[in-house]
Length: 313
Image 1 (spheres, helix red, strand yellow):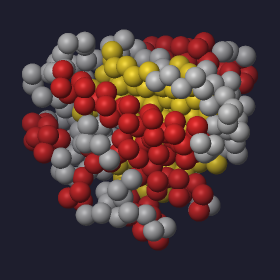
Image 2: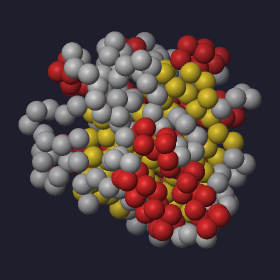
Image 3: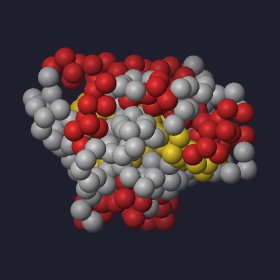
Image 4: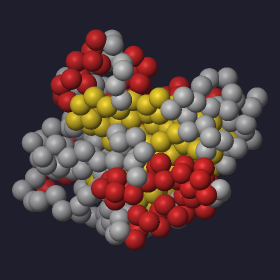
């Protein structure tokens, strides 16, 4: 078996250790573990990096703990509105969807855009029509309804969205911010890299706001020459810094290591006032998960098969 590796994230945040009830922390740990193992299973059985990241992200989209798919937050109109992107480092092909409401797994729609259309980013009703024509699972909007997310929205719907990240409003007894975007990066046994990111965006977001997740080079990027990257946090800062591509560029053009490049990129986000983090794997199988917040829900495995799950710094 080649030098396989995979990393996943379920969002960064300012949550401190001890602020989450033990049963909720365990639920997150179990969900991250299931996603990570599913992606690793694809890789360890000779599957592609693209299939591994899609598999891992789909499981998180199906889990209401995360701000993606079924766990997506509500926008200002009380609707779940989702974005996703995927990229193949072997040929630099990419696909993305934005502002979709009825596609059960937006990451699979992004993959279909990449594989079966001449385009990269499709939005709203057009993306949904394309997904339906591709035979993807189209569901009623009620599928995405989550009671906890709806309660969070009701608490904020009459307020202006002042934040700029993929933030989930938390119950009043839990202090801190939680950015809930999900993502995965992988290296397969053939030496190919891939990255995938999916999000429900901002709680109570207005005006059709789209963050960094579906923007290739901002929140998602993969290139076999260098690395694969998936970001989470205050998306506008990652867009302004073209953060995911910047990691790759620092490696390719300045000879940085993955650690050096990702450290520099997160530093740039912070200098603009942004919070968040990213996961990345390079073409040697090195995995890094830097973030400038107090927590990031994450997991990783390499060719040794040892599983790592972490939430806090």
